[in-house]
Amino acid sequence: MTKKFCANCEAYRDTKAEDRIETYKVHGKSIPVPVRVDVCLTCGETLFDKERDSDMLHRVYTAYRRQAQLADAIEALTADEATKETEQ
Image (cartoon, rainbow, N blue to C red; front, side, top):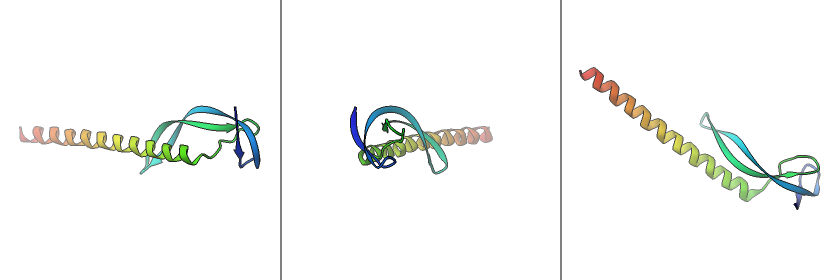
């Protein structure tokens, strides 16, 4: 266990790390991302960590770009198939 500052308690408290899946919205799409957060053992509040949050945002946007590229590829294939059917 480590002690970190809890803004809710306004004091340094013992914390524990927890693995969670958090979902963020990017351009209307829900993006689930696995994250590790520090939780105050006194009040249960998730503690702010600038480095962790920055890394998490990077992973969210990377996941969004992957989904968007996949969606674009599927749309292109569907449009290509529709064009082939029209030509026949």
